[in-house]
Image 1 (cartoon, chains in turn yellow, brown):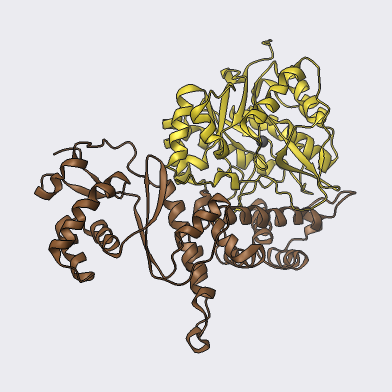
Image 2: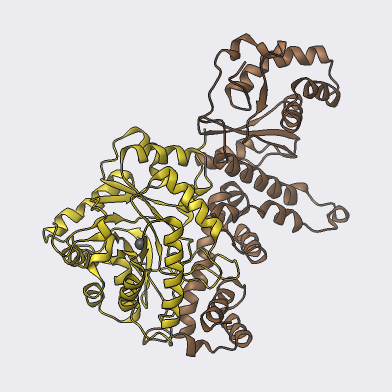
Length: 307
Length: 284
Ligand SMILES: [Fe+2]
């Protein structure tokens, strides 16, 4: 799969992975993980010294692990949360992640945290602001930061750059890596009426270190990034294109609500192998009759193991 | 303030404040001197307001899911609607500030307590209406804290102590587990919480004083009801770290002969060690 396009900031292609989720802890403590690697939600383990950390230590001892955060708030106009970065670094000392990622977004301002991934106006002002902060974070973490394109539901009138242009500039100015969420490109493409293929063709492929795949929900007038469904055919098609353009990078299936049993999860991510051969599963985008879907669900982080 | 900072304050305020979306947008537009239609690009399918609404709705749903995950028994007791009313009011009073989702529900028991009517004695109200939810919230919060805080795991265990009762001779030093939590409640809620966890039928208990310990050993969280003297002993021991003084204090509190208490303790201490309420230093 390697080609001269491949670079990935010198980071390896870990293969096919899944998110480490509480629901599968018991299974994973007794069984082979089968998948090549795991992604954790960093915040779920930062102040957690219970069973979750025990499971994490086990997983770290048998598979490569990547730390994926949701609260760095790299685009916020609040000062960088240095306490958060300190805790993130402490966790990294334990996990020794292959890389650390977060999102091109902000989560709140005035010290509030909406626990959502909010979009930025894609302006030169934002670009300058985010560039400075990425550089500072990279200095603190002493490694490149890998940033994910979020799914978005609004665009700003002031935006002068397309998201792919913004990311390209950011990569050029900071040397950060990209986590390309092809499902988010699909979701945002529908919501903002751009061609997701065009987006994927126009990001800096050498900087792509990882991809996310997931299943969204069709809410009629918009698509919502619910992470609670199998990956639909259209997302698989974008995934294959992105893998071809990047020369092959680590793939992670996100499934955060309605989480299936472990075997089903593994079967879903393994579909990627067929997809790369051009064999696409026939899965429509899930349509919800109710407006109760949650984008970026986070409550899966909160489960207790009882006697 | 920069343009970007102003827009972020404007959007955060709309998302986090309670009320009808249209009204929230109008107030924020006024306060931050912005016009939502000039900030957010409408599309053929949705207006600027509708797009903001996706985020505003998502915020409440997402955090309500977190509150339900931390307080499942309380959710079960109150039902979706009443739990939702309290949890939403709480999120308005204490909007999320920390990256740690477990900080979100931290003050919920206190919030419920403060939400009780001041003049409830005059109305002679049934305590189960007000105290029961508060106590259940306290217990569930204790469980979630114990499940995450630093505990005994990883500490070297001194196996020789359990049988030999060396503590009687003052040759071993004991400590309360760092994650131990003790609650004195007016309702015996252990069975209720466990039934909800297991998905079996949860019976709301009658009022009865209850002494509860929440502990963790080998990463398993234990929630148990204690004898009154056991609870007083552990509470005092956790505070002072002094074994003999705590025994004396307990004898006084519970009006027991010290000798008979010590006899009971001899039998109980090995249990307390095995379940992780207390532990012995590995150095003798
Ligand atoms: Fe993602």
